[in-house]
Each structure stands twice: as C-alpha cells, then as structure tokens.
Image 1: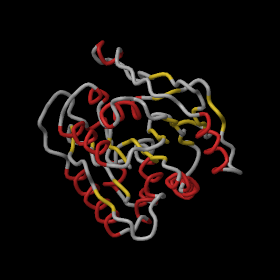
Image 2: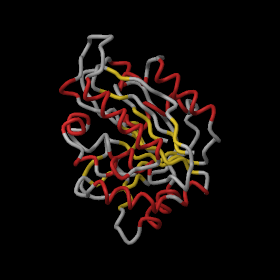
Image 3: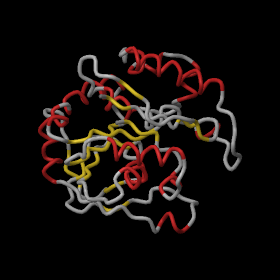
Image 4: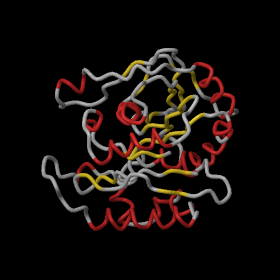
Length: 252
C-alpha cells in the first residue's frame, strides 16, 4: 500500500484523506507487522530501525504545539529488521537504534491503525541509488507479504512544495500535476511500471511533479510487490494545495 501522506497536520485532522486511511486499515487483513518506506528517511545508505520501542519523530517545524504532543507508541520488531537485512543481502543494511517513526509513517498509521498495537519498522531510502535500483531491490522484499507483513510506502506521487498554495483553500490543482497523475494512473492500471520507474525521462510534467526523488521513490517499493496480474486500485484520491497528490495506491 502506498499512501500519499501530505501535510503533517493530517495526523490530527479528520478529512476525506484521513477517513480514507481509516477505511483502509479497517478493510485489509490485519498485518502481523508493517515495513514502512517513508519519504522522510532519505539519506546515504540503507538503514532499518531495529528498536523494540521506536520513538515518535516530529520531523517538521512551524506547526501548532498539539502536533508535537502527538505520539504513536507502536512497538518495533528487531526480528523483522533482521529479516529485512537477510532479504536484501548482499546489499549492506545497517541495524539502526537512533531513528524511529517519522511523520511519513505515523501521521498515516495513527488513522489506519489507531491502537498502535502492530509492530512497525522503517527502511531508509538510499539517496545515492537510482530509481531502477530501488525498484529492483524492493522486489527482494516480496516474501514479507506471505509472512503477513504490510509493505507500506509513504510519500506523494506529486509533491512540489514550491508551488503549494499555503493557507489558500480550496485551490484547483495545476495542469501539470493533473497530467502527471493521469499518466501515472494509466500506467498503473495497465500494469506497465516501466515509465514510472524511469520517470526522470518523462519531461517537464514529471520534473514539476517530482522535483526531488524522496517523496516519489516509496511508490516504487510498493509497485515492486505486485505479482502477476494483481489488481491496482486507488482507495484515496485528491489534491491538496494544487501541487500535492494525495493518491493512495493499493496492490492486490
């Protein structure tokens, strides 16, 4: 499942997107654990959180005090972290004891699984690797699906903060944002992920939609889990601020 997580304030709000996330949590089989690939752990190398009790990270600034008081006390899973290390070998994956659950993860899960009783592990995104590398590497995580683990990507298909209409709502989405999302939807429904993996070659719309890779790459980790002709669906839709796609993408 890929979640378009958008504004951190969604953690506290009830809106069409957060209600959609709650609906997803209620409708899918309860995971034994969750492996989250969040846009907000984008760094050199590939760490995985290995704490038994990961902290809630408030990795943002300038928001109301109540957002910094929010916590998502889900347990971690050193066992799942070790499993990820094994699956991604021989690529080196470090067991991290300092990070935790950033808002790309917990601002969604606080709605999807509000009891915070499912173990959650985060996998970092190596900023030195290509989109093709991430897509092919993510395929190695496929056995986790058979083990009851939800592979979760959290970012945004379209994410351009420079064009975002801060504080002015409602606002119509930009034409380039609409075109890029429509193209992506078509590729997803057709099961043709090649253009999406090679999105950097798709021209101006793609560069405006994903000016940096961090929010886009989590989608590739989810697409890599598709098997055969499994259906692709969009349980949550919409745009925020004209330049943020809130699209969620479900595989299977």
